[in-house]
Image (cartoon, rainbow, N blue to C red; front, side, top):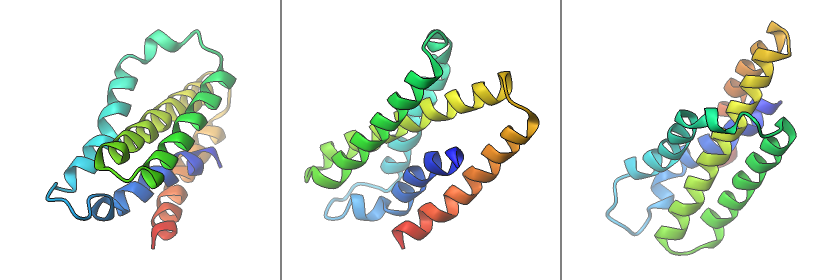
Length: 131
């Protein structure tokens, strides 16, 4: 279930890349970069955040994803939409790191398998939510 909730916003923005950029001459690759670059940077510096509790990281991830989606939907200018997409990326990165670290440390193999299956299901549901 947690893998699903992490992937749905990501895939929805991938599917909506052309609509996010409607009325501009910007390439859709900018949306993909905005979805991946912040999360990638976060994963590189993730060792600095190991002392933060698991619960706090999950709430932080949820907050970033919620605020990011609201910004992308309700801010009319392109910069605001990109800021929202970047916030979703950060939230997804925090959530993914937190859940994978917990699964690797404390839970059995079934938890990791469930996370992987959840991300696959989330990809399908994210695409369906946009269509």
